[in-house]
Image 1: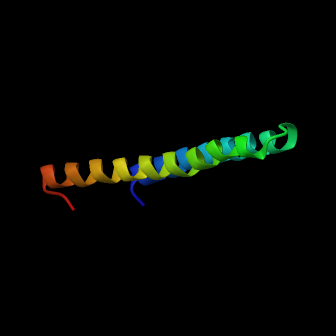
Image 2: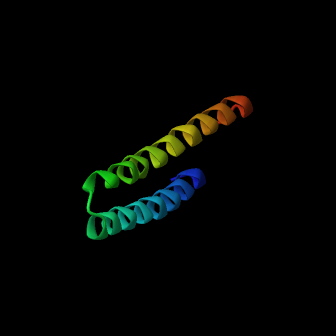
Length: 68
């Protein structure tokens, strides 16, 4: 596993943990469960976008230097 993937995994675990805590707090204390939807979406979309961007960056850098 490459370093960027390890760093992404660390970031994703922290991001998803915080999102789960936010959703849990909203569901426990807010009267409206619809308020929990944005943290769920961001909890999934942000790590996915970060992985895609890091993958593109790694692919671009490996082509530039001639590495695989």
